[in-house]
Amino acid sequence: MAIEERVAQAPGDGNVPAQPTSAPGGNTGSFAPATMSSPDYGAQVFVWWREEIRDRDLDLMTEGGFNWIKQAFSWESIEGRKARQYDWSTADKIVTHANERDLKILARLSLDPDLQGFWAGDPPANGDAFAEYAGALAARYNCQPGAIGCIQAYQIWNEPNLAREWGGKRPNPAEYAQFLGKAYQAIKAANPNAIVISAGMAPTGDNNDIAMPDDIFYDQMYQAMGGSSTGYFDALGVHGAGYAAPPELDPAEAASNPKYGGYRFFAFRHVEDIRAIMEKYGDTAKKIVLLEFGWTFDPVNPAYKWHGADAGIDKFVQADYLVRAYKYAADNWPWVGLMSVLTMPNLAWLDDGNGSDEEQYWWAIMEPSPIDAKEWRPAYIELCIYLNSLDGQRCIYDPNQ
Image 1 (cartoon, rainbow, N blue to C red):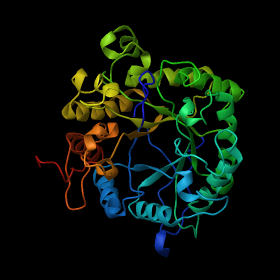
Image 2 (image 1 turned 135 degrees about the horizontal axis):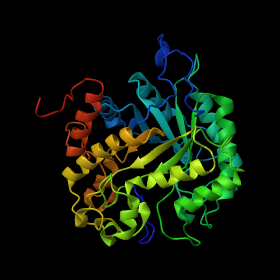
Image 3 (image 1 turned 135 degrees about the vertical axis):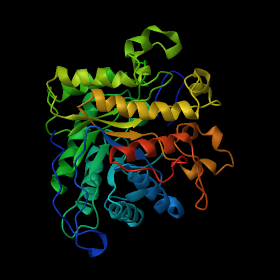
């Protein structure tokens, strides 16, 4: 989640049950259906390259009361060398092991923006090749009898309102809409029940060759779709970082009070501004999916510490705000679906011996923990207590039980 100084980035029809299937390994059973409650509960995980902690972290998601995981299925990791030459080995393990735990999967489909010389080129010119990749993934994990596994939902690209994510070119909502529509058709042809979600946008106040404000991008995207999202997505993807503000803060306060940053997007409830755009175009039957949301308590990185440690956010405040955000959504947002917390930790942050210089480290709800240790932060424990309570259960990691 790289950041430029002025680009502040945070971290319907899709609710059709999937058909009964055979579970991984050939056992009789069914995959978890492609449905979302309002709200629904998930978190970003990093289990692609770290097989030694994959099952441990998947178990932590189940034990924590989460229903969904969000995992990147990056294009270059599966079809990195040449068209139609797929390496499914890691993806198969992640999908089947998550399925065995009844965890639903939101697969983020995107390309590393720093990758040079990728065979398919950059967006939007690579849209046809990307759609073919998305269709191949959806066909392999199509939740049907005999399938290797089940992916219930797909996120199409990431933050195309940044030039960095759009081939170095000025963000173009019409180009992204066309790109999205191609992927939608390919996925639906392979799995009609899959939930296709548009990319979340980076919150930013810039409108130039390197960035476009999220609300402007969404509005122009609807215009490019002719005012109708039919054939483009089943749920609208949004990013909802809270920055320096508590989750209940009115975006108008964030815009008028300098301590909160001076823009409406510096409030978690900026999501309501995006919902208003959906309402403007009559797209009220579909949900918003929060592809990432959270609070950082970063005391190190200048672009983040102003709304982290400098704003009084510590790991205990982070935990409190995350629970309150879920509660606010449950009370006020009947149109929200999955809310994916940013983030479970990534052991790769420790590869240089120092996790604290990695800005994502400070958003995480747990410490990066080796397989023989679970190093807690309050956020995981408090979320575990809250989410389990919704089902009348107790968090097994609650120190007070």
